[in-house]
Image 1 (tube, helix red, strand yellow):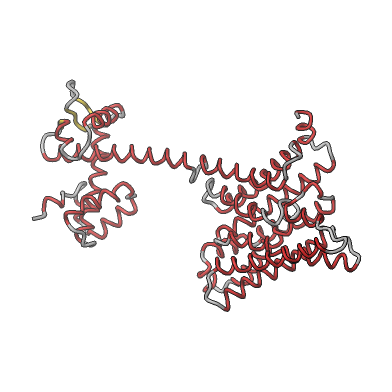
Image 2 (cartoon, one colour; image 1 turned 180 degrees about the vertical axis):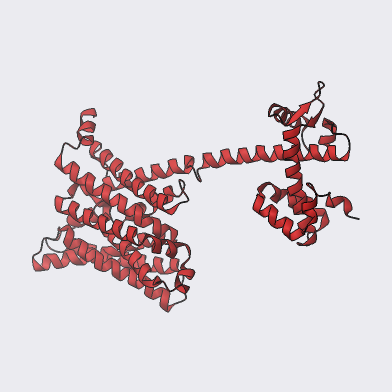
Length: 437
C-alpha cells in the first residue's frame, strides 16, 4: 500500500499524470464558474445541464456508429453533449420567458424531460444488434482512468478559457450576481453576460462528464463554492478558495481511487469535496460553526461586562460613588455568584476598585470613562426612540439595550445632530425614564 501511495504521489506513471492533471484542472474550473453560479442562486442549473446532456451523448453515439466514426471518441460525444446542453439551457430560458413558472419549476421540467429522453435512447442503444453502451457509461458515471493525453489537453484548454473569461469579466459578473437591476438600469448587457456565464457552466459540465459523470458533475459546481463561502466575504478570495478546493478535491479523489481500484473515481472526488465542505462548515473563519460559537460566547461576555459597568455607574449616579453588591443586583435579575465573578474580572482588568470586604466597590478612572460612554450611548438612543420613533415608554429601555452595544462614533454623531445641541452640552444626558409621568 505504501509503495503504491508513493508511486501515485510521485506521479511515476504516465496515466496517473494525465488523469491527475485533467481532474485537477476540471476541479479548479468548476469551482471558479460555480462561484458565480452559486451567487446567482442557480445551483440547480448545473444539475439540469448535466442531465440534459444525456440525449446529446446517446444521439452522438448512434450517429457515430451510423457514419463509421469511433463511438467512444470523447470529443465526438462531447460535441453531442454540448449541443444537447445548450438546447436544455435554451429550453429553460424559453419556459421562463413564455410562462409564469419560476426558475425551479423550469429547471425541474427540463431536467426530467431531457434525462428521460436520454434514458429511453440509452435503452434503445443497448437493444441494437452489436450495440454496446460501454462507451457511454464512463460519461454517465465518470471514468477519468480512461482519459487520454488528447482529453487532458481538451480539459486544459477549456479550463484556461473558463479562467480567462471569468478573470476578464470579473467585475461584470460580480455586478450581475449582486445587483442585476442596477446593472440593467446602468446600461450593462445583462442578458449577454448571463448567457455567457451559462455558456461557461455548459463548458464546465461537458469537461466534467468524463471525470465525475453526468450525475455528479453538479457536485463540483456547488460544493467547492459553498465551502469557500465559509472562509471569506471577499468575492476574489472566495473564487480562489473555491478553485483551490475543487482542484484539491479532484486530487484527493484520484489518489484515493488509484489506491483503492474497486471504488469509482468520480464518487471519491465528490466525497473529497464533501469532506472539505464539512471541515469548512466547522472551522471556516467567517461562518464556521466553531468560530460562530466562539464569537457568540465572546459577545455574550462583552454584553454582560457592559451591563455591569452601566449598572454600577447608574447606582453611583444616584448616590455615593461607592456601590454595594446589593444595589447592583437590584438593577437587573443577575445571579449573585455570576455578578461576583464579573465584578472580580472588572477589578482584575483595572476598571474597578474594590473594598476589603469585597461587597462594595467604585469605578476608577478607566472604568468611569468606559461606563460613561456606555450610559451615554444608551440614553441617546432612548431619547431618540421617545422623541422620533414613537416607542412606548415602557419598552424604551429594553429596545435601547438591543442597539446600544453596536453604536459606533458615526452613529453617535448622527444621533447628536438629530437630537440637537443638548446632547452635546453634557457628557451623559439625564435619564429620560425619570422624566416620564
